[in-house]
Length: 174
Image (tube, rainbow, N blue to C red; front, side, top):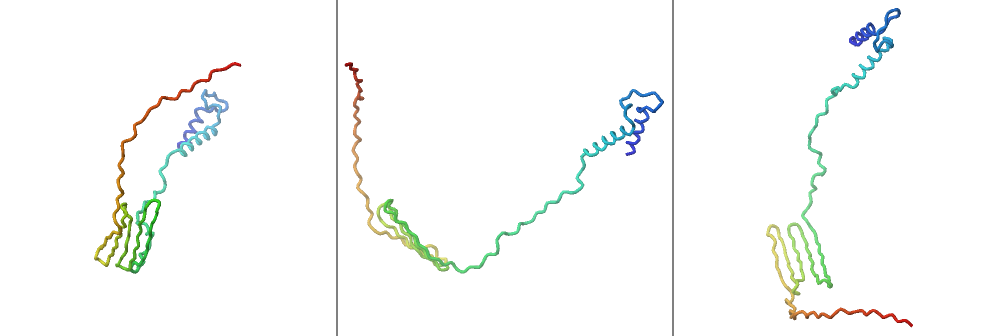
């Protein structure tokens, strides 16, 4: 601020004419001293306002922590118990298969079947008792049937006929 007042005083002495004295040929001769001081003050304030300042706060420090779990503790359950079955029988496509199974704790038993392409029905009965592993008994019902193969003869030889011609009608005048 002191620098600004010194500058205004110097401008006033050099460039602004006093009454009864010779006038200067400077650009500032028509402005009074207060006007020059105001312009310089405004320029200084504009320079000060546009100056880049460091932020007066510190950015927040990131915190890293484990998120809260979205699940609860596992609920204790008893041994598994269920019964289910399903089957498909489609005469149009020839599909015939199904399954049934039941479980009580660590003991599981069930069976499934499928109609094979040769016409037999394959049935699998299985069971699992504790740690015994998967024990299966496979059986087949019916007799395998293989259709007789048809003997195919050679393809007929193509015969080519000439293209039909369209005769143009002759104009008749009566």
